[in-house]
Image (tube, rainbow, N blue to C red; front, side):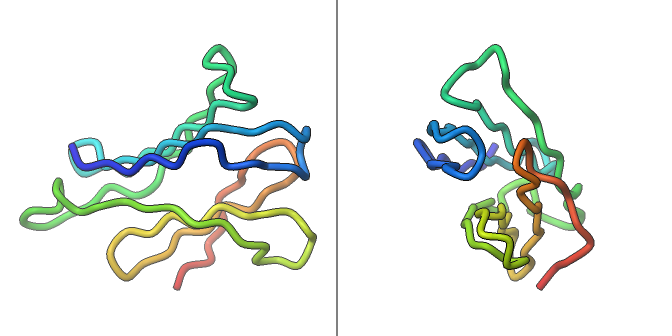
Length: 101
């Protein structure tokens, strides 16, 4: 398993408290888990793509956040190789889009 941890990302446009967000490559499946306000009992899982090809189980997954749709809320960017998978912040959760770079 190859992983990346981003701890204490503040999603201030949701409830004003910090969320802990973990992204990882679990046997070629991209997974992101958010712990709203650090509360593991409210964990939300976001599934990214399944990776295909030799050695893809070792491909790193990283995260960044930026307001991609101009609504003032930070959106989730999942980086897998040269691909960015965008999940838009709707104010309560991140919602997948078809937008990729």
